[in-house]
Length: 371
Image (cartoon, rainbow, N blue to C red; front, side, top):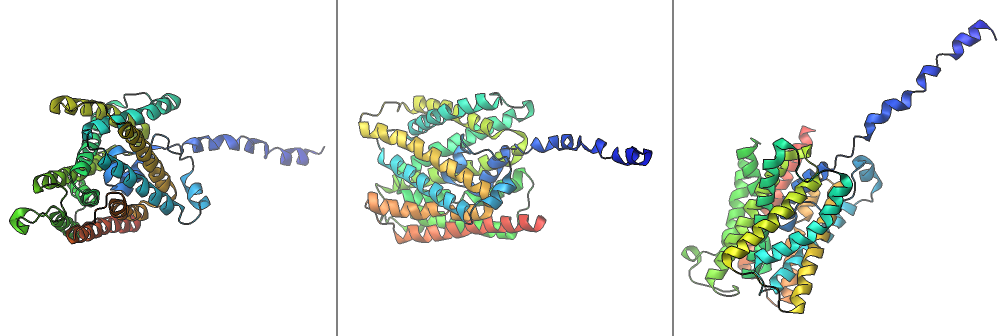
């Protein structure tokens, strides 16, 4: 019990509270990061970009640990599965010809709302969002729902492969709008990719003043084909605007609120459109009702797997793998609709996919160098 022993035994005592210093590590529940990553990946045309992330997304409690724990290629497999589910949903939209695209959109919004509301209540995020961000959330809802209605309209008027290819111009529009509104860099490469994408759209749309009166490969008449092509381009533009809004909002808003605004405003917008065009009616056929349910299921499943993909894989490879949407659209169109794509569509697809992939790869390389 010497004095020296007592003095040397006391210093370790103050170190015991050290675990209390680690409390701030609980912070990683930054779920909006999933939304941002999904947005980058989807320059994700079609429905992923329009619809936002899935309400049932896995909690991103430790992203780095998940990346290390997951097996190689798992994120790309999730992306492939997501692309397949989105393509099947597109096929089902095509099969429902008696129901307006806005009504299909309304049913899908209702379906997603059933999943989002319990999640919002469980997370206690509220239903309105931060004061300074509400205008952006509102615009995100308007742009996202408009993109989906236009996309569904395009599927109904033209071959699904043609419409799917055109929506893949979304990444080049995203780069353009990010330059205008977010002051991001826009290089000559971006301009080249934009021109290349537009060339692909022209090959698919085949305007008469360039291609004459040939209607080979078109489903009805040229008027329907042109309307579908314009709707698909409009969908790609609104998808790009949605992604720019998501970048602007960033991590400051919970990703569930992004989805909530999308489904609420999407439902209201769809109802307004249906009243204006006077096209509202319940599906007569039991098969159409089944298709409506399956569109909601496959769309939701596609969003779930896309979100899981960007949790375990970098956004660049996910965005490139997402181009498998086009491949699946071609395959499903041939098998289930018995319609071979024309050489014009194939040529346009090559132009659009090359330009969107180039835009994604360039942005990916820039971000890697910045880090």
